[in-house]
Length: 169
Ligand code: IMP
Image (cartoon, rainbow, N blue to C red; front, side, top):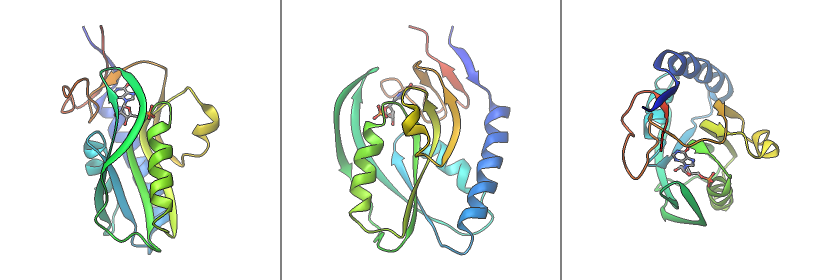
């Protein structure tokens, strides 16, 4: 049986808090929320609806994983279609694990010369705490366990589950 790690109510409460924080930080800045496909779609969709003013969204896609093992190689396979020059960008991730995907994406976006670049991740795996302090918006910190649901998958499955589940082998 898969165990519920973060339930629907906890997610809703945290989304509201993050939304308030982002609204305070980005009011009047016409931010771009750049979701990392596919995992961030549920988080991004819920998060931007907690923000009481208009924001732009776009998506970027990187590939780094097969099954539960990281391959250590990250490729950008779909880039943003917006001009990010002088824009305030919030990169929206489902989960930061080793941080490899994030580093690659941050370097890539920096080259586009945005006015600012911050990261919002729904989950952060507590592996590299130095990395934690570089991420401004974190939904939940979790242990080193494989989780699914709320956008996160295992071989393409479980993304639509509304809660975060700890996947049993
Ligand atoms: P990183 O490059 O090691 O930080 O890995 C980031 C990517 O790996 C995420 O965007 C996910 O696609 C995937 N990933 C890492 N941990 C998990 C997990 O526990 N469940 C599902 N996907 C994960």
